[in-house]
Amino acid sequence: MARHKEFEIHKVLDKAMYLFWTQGYEKTSMKELVDTMGVHRKSIYDTFGDKHALFIQALERYQFLQTQYLQSLIEKKAPVKERIRIFLANTIDNKDMPKGCLMVNSGVELGTLDSEVSTFVENGYNHTEQYLRALIIAGQTNGEIKADCDAEFLSHYFMNAWLGLRTMVKTTADQQRLNGIVDTTLRILE
Image 1 (tube, helix red, strand yellow):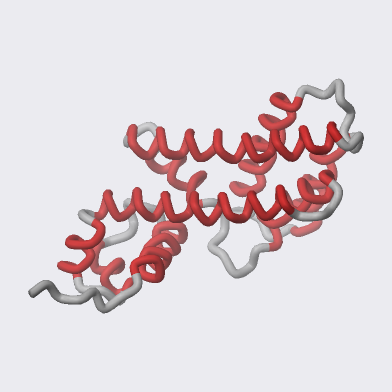
Image 2 (tube, helix red, strand yellow):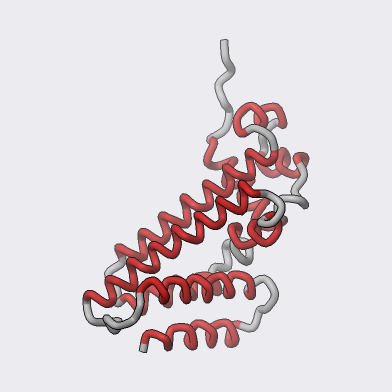
């Protein structure tokens, strides 16, 4: 008779995701994963596979949570410019999360070494740009953003700004500087 799993998969996967997010792939050992997840090594291998497979599942979990957040911004009843500000500022103000972005960190650490991670990160970036483009088009539709602005270009622009912020929060605590970057970035919509 098969043993019943004594853990909830998303809870332990979230623990692995936060550990990878904080330390990166290479610096995270299987022992640390076992200790952090609170699951026996054999159970990790049986449930998630090896360390790399677990890492990919952690990236998938991160993308799922990111998609939920982006969808909530799309559905939020607020001016589009304010929703884009929230999108950018959340990177600065999110004190309960590890600094930076698991996707950015993974792309920088493994992007040229691991084609699976590189492809996953690129697809994640494209997915986020689609949400940004949808926000921009909504702003153009309601007259908040000039219709002659190229929504595709603006989505690339805001994605680049967001990725830059997600990198900068790892190296600076200067909130005034970071908020100034958000303000300057949003001026393109004026």
